Image (tube, rainbow, N blue to C red; front, side, top):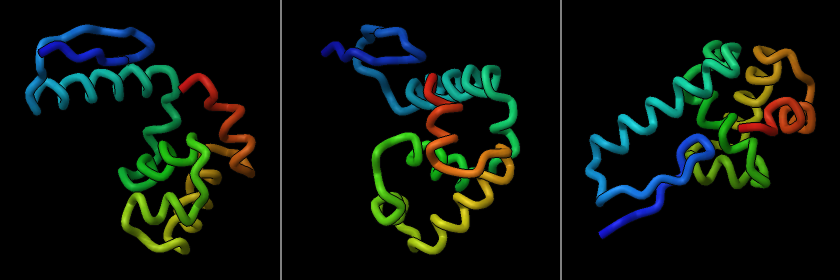
Length: 100
């Protein structure tokens, strides 16, 4: 069975991948992301998870449900993300990180 995988803008065809292959691919994509945006290293693991969700069109409530945390926790993480990335709003975040 062959799967198409989109990695860093490259569409790759691979034989069925096992769990460890996915981990390696994710680590490589993460390293590439940090090379482009080193300021993201300031974010905690949970903040990175919220950050990734903020790049979608999900509301904070939907993000909370997706990550199994409260809406107030999402709001708290958003404030920390904005502070660490020196931005003031989700709109600024989307503009600054539109290439991700």
